[in-house]
Image (cartoon, rainbow, N blue to C red; front, side):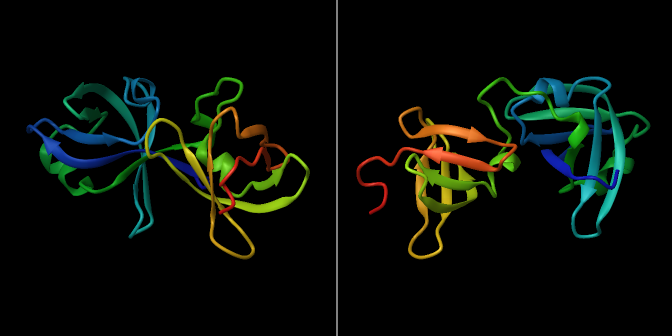
Length: 173
């Protein structure tokens, strides 16, 4: 469990007295992550604590998921986990379709124009609405905002950590 972990949710409260917790999902695969038998890791970043848990039951309720972990059977056992994150190991990541990527695979990639000119490195990913926007930190000047749309994104090579884009009018302003 010393490998890299990835966020899938955050415990925001308890629910009832039988050990259920309310979790805000931070994953595109909540049905997989929060289903019976799923292996998760409870983490407290401040205290650098990691506790492996198994989901005994899980169900959506309004805008959260209600989860019950095996061996944690009452409110007193789970109350201390409010604010903790739920994570998965790299081995437990869901295989994605062709052309789909995890954020951690894109952040840090170098960005080139279709002519081969280096523009910078992807520093973060924004999700403002219809499509993601990759923020490219440039050596000089303001960050470049790259919309993740077919007209702009030409090639993503995760193995080479390189993204090729087509500059649209006004992107460099």
